[in-house]
Amino acid sequence: MQRKFQFYIVPTPIGNMEDISLRALDVLKSVDYIACEDTRTTQNLLNKYDIRTKTFAYHKYNEKSKVNEVIWILKSGKTIALVSDAGTPMICDPGSVLLKELKNNNIEVTALPGACAITTFLSQVPRDDEEYTFVGFFPKTDKAGKELIQKYTKTNMVFYESPNRIIDTLKNIKSIRGEVQIALGRELTKMFEEITIDSIDNIMTKYKDGIKGEIVCMIYASDDNDIEIDTKIEKLKNKGFKSKEIATILSELYEVNKNEVYEKVIKH
Ligand code: SAM
Image (cartoon, rainbow, N blue to C red; front, top):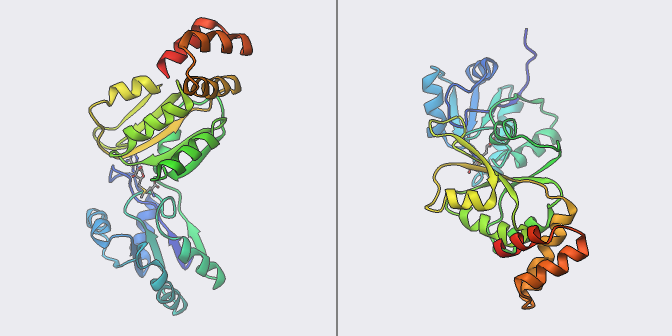
């Protein structure tokens, strides 16, 4: 016997249509309505599993105006499942405005576990350190992007990014963090899925002609010395110091190998 709720948050596949749980299918079949980010996208999934439940649109453009209607439906005794186009609702997808109101109205809510690009990605990316920060979509403005890169240097930083912007974003990361390790997941669970874990230089070379598909990316945390050295290289370069001079100064200052610093300087 399953416990009954009034409102279900249901993850849907992020690529492979079979990545949906038996319970999720059961919930989608048994609720009165499915609130969809895009009814046409969800209909493809419902058709595949022969689910005939009524749908309505609930997306970021009508999120505020739809809230009262959703509450009214729930208070009349009906049940609703919320889905987004792909993955877990509320993870860079709509739902937050509604969820607050559901709590205010004491509606019984539950979330099902399931497909999500972050967890699919992180569960196959080796890390020395369990800690990570997920920042959602990488900011669109240059300034906000640079601030974020500077903010999270000592923790693994995970973000979603569009294929059109990832190369510029990597260039920004490179200019601030220098030679850093990157993990890049593309088209996860789909035919051309791939995970690349490499230095930022190699990743930029690999994708020099562009990159297609959906992307999740992680900048590995750097150790304190590396971050300090990278920041100082940038500063000394801007002040007009020559590469050899920078290598000499920083290797003395941080008691590290001069040639290694020199390599860093010329790659910067
Ligand atoms: N709610 C979704 C989740 O649970 O992951 C995320 C929705 S967000 C609007 C869409 C972004 O998630 C894409 O632009 C991409 O960055 C990432 N994403 C979604 N599916 C992916 C996949 N199959 N492979 C890699 N990244 C994916």
